[in-house]
Every structure is written in C-alpha cells, then in structure tokens.
Image 1 (cartoon, rainbow, N blue to C red):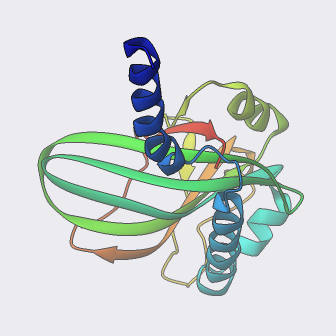
Image 2: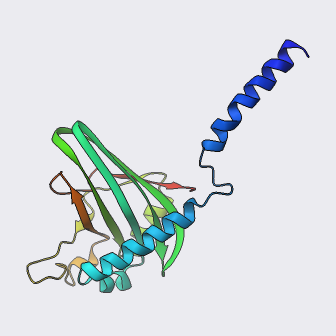
Image 3: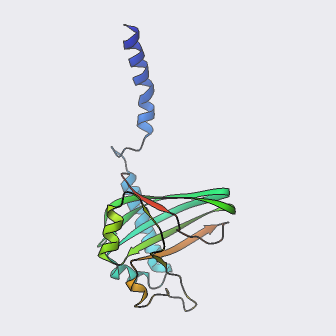
Length: 185
C-alpha cells in the first residue's frame, strides 16, 4: 500500500466519527424533537397567556421558539431552535442566535412566539437569508387584567412577539438583535 493510499485511508477513517456526530438530517430525529417541543410550548402558551389563541388565529403564521437559553457574564449570548407554522402545519425550522455585551450576569431560559400578522411580514421573514428582530416588532405582554395587551391597533402591527415561560437569574428577556436563520434539523 502506498503512502498516499495509507494516508487517505487514515484520514477517511478518522473523519467518519466526526461526520457521524454532525446533525446533517440523515436518519436524524431532529425535526421530530423540535415539533414535539413546539407542540408543548404552544399548548403552554395557550394555557398560560390569555389571548394568545385568538392572536394565533389572526396571524398569517407563527414562529414558535420553545426553548431559548441565554447566559452572560459581561459578554453573553442566546441560542434556540424552533419551527415556523402556517395554518397549524410546520413549514420550516429556524435557529435563533443573539450576542450581547454589557452589565449582565446570570442565565435564563424562556420561550417566545413571533406572530406574523401580515402576508408581507411573513414573506419577508421567509425569504430573508437571516432575519433580525428590529423596531417593527411589537411586544405583547400580559396586563394587570390577565390578558395580552392587544387591541385592533396592535393587530395591524406586522410582527407581534410574546415571551413566556421565563426561568432563571437574568431579569427580563428581549429579542432585540436576535437573528433567525432557516435550518435543516
């Protein structure tokens, strides 16, 4: 066996475990796991956030991110995976990534859903190579009456974000600067 053949054999053999560890979607259950988490997060949102079911019925589509993990100590970041659903069916999978710098320490986990209220907002999101949260997102929060602070003016906003299920040591959660990218789980 020549040196080139042995070298090729060794490199190929050494790279197989690395390739097997990659989540390339072949024989992967990644999409099933994401869908199961999205189903659970959606049901939790409907049960715990009054008015969210009505909001979902008015939306053209919704991106459900069932688990975002955020941590920081001076520098921070967050990551999570979720699914875009149109008419209740998953059409794409997305990751959410953000980075931060500043006075921060701790960690938290939370879920959030982006409701796309117009066809144009949904189309822009779906065709962007990496969509980032900006000033066009309205945050809906539960008011003192126990319902989402949503009225007919809010429903005309292109994108409405609902954050729920927060647990951890960082106070508050924001989606500003979060970048969403389509993935193949």
